[in-house]
Length: 231
Ligand code: C5P
Image (cartoon, rainbow, N blue to C red; front, side, top):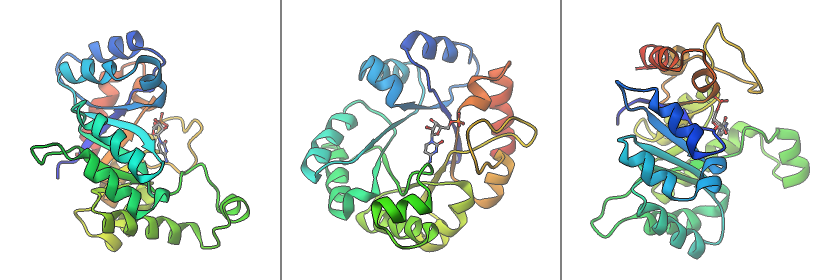
């Protein structure tokens, strides 16, 4: 499985996203399209970015009844994206249905990755509001194991959790890790951050990097620095 740097293209419209990508004349970075850009522009934004030669991680985090997720995933697989995701909280049955929907008639399919607990959920709120009484790291690993049992390819997690996930689920189970900041750069609203070099050391498979690249004075140099440190 190839290690890669995925740029989070968190832009509000197609023009901004495409003019950002136009700056990359020599490389074709792997791109993450999230809810903001997808809801603003619809599925055509995936087709357009794909046609320019980029790989796409479509970060829509599906969570619904199994049949609905299965049908929605079948639609997403026809967009020819490379990676999709869902919430592991939807249960193993939902994850299995998602895989079935995602698999194309020729047997190929995008990678399917599960979100365990959102990093914005604190242990305290998980206990008080969701009535989940276990420590956060146990919940994350348990959800990762559920995803593996359902046949998924990996999870989104903090690089700090990547080693434990690999230990529990095997080294081929992918860890896709946001929360990346250069050691000498601003942290912004992320709390627990890791540098690309450190993420490599811990064993992340893919790092997801947004503002350290998209808001850099020289995005190309920032992207290349990520690649150099991580790969
Ligand atoms: O700009 P920044 O590098 O913080 O962007 C990180 C990207 O990863 C954003 O698109 C954010 O929504 C996403 N993400 C995250 N933490 C998670 C899951 C997704 O930062 N646990």
